[in-house]
Image (cartoon, rainbow, N blue to C red):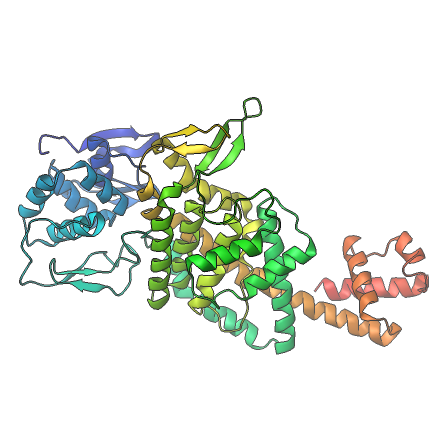
Length: 511
């Protein structure tokens, strides 16, 4: 192993232009040198010749004194110390090296914290023990650096003298890096902000707003999937969203949710897939699949979903941030794509579920997060593709006779160990948008509607059904009642009365 040259000078690397000519080190250098079958991390490490240290979205640049020795162990120490833990990297590395190679690496500095971390990771990821004696003394060290990545309280591994603070299980453990955006959102305490905003809102109005928001969220979730559901179907799914968090997350609960989402099962095979799956189009001339995302192999679903459920329960009981927890479970689910249909809507339901289980709000409001996602649909698609697109190069598949896909290589690790940081930032953007825009706008609209209704009651003794129709017509025609409506549905009103109503509508709803 030590004959490999890991560090290399680059100006362009895998289509990325480096901010300056520098030496590639850490994870990127090892992945390239050993040809590990995985996408490059979102951020790569460089050592500058100009003795400068800085970072941007895709690069961390270090001074020359940080340059690690050109051997595997030194590169791994650098990566763990400065780039955090990358579970997919270590799984791919351990699959490529022999147990003798790993034992030799660890034994070179057996009691060092980085050797112990590598040792723990091997036995945790591979579920196989190395022939190394337990550490008998020394301080415990946390596996994840809590300054770099979000973690849980953790349990002590006496064998390695490591605190396992990984937020998941070997079967499912996405990780999220601490970024300025995420830290600012967490420090701003959005949940408390919402509680303060809603404290002055009358309880009856809040209940009505909640009902409207549930229906709004349900319709938005269908719209994202390119569907326009009938009112009854949207209301049924809205009712399900309203119960989010009531039931523990289990395989049976996921199956129940699919049954609620899918109205007609004539053309859908219900339950967990027993065949391949993909998201994308079919070639118009040949009918062959054109995937933008390839789902997990159906043979891996039992292990992946069991891992996801176990991790969800673990996160619920931990003190990890609710939005970070929701990101891991909800996006992990949609990347696995365990069902033939209904994955997207259940994915967004899981956001509600985790936020409710983690008591993100105390006002009883279910977040209309799908409405915010729909408002930012291009960003949503982009953040999904940010995960899916790089993986396509590492999934070996073929077209089946029915123009589905069949995955030929081992892909399970891609779905359980991934960097969920971009998804977490996107979801927090949507949560912020929901709290500061969507919910206040809905509450304000109901307050304006009630004010307008009181005016109509006092002036015209107009029944609720007629008020609703009048508001609908005025909204559709920029505050003016059309000539047709004035001559048909509202023929009882004089021109002067119509003008008075229009003026009052404009005054109330323009505030």
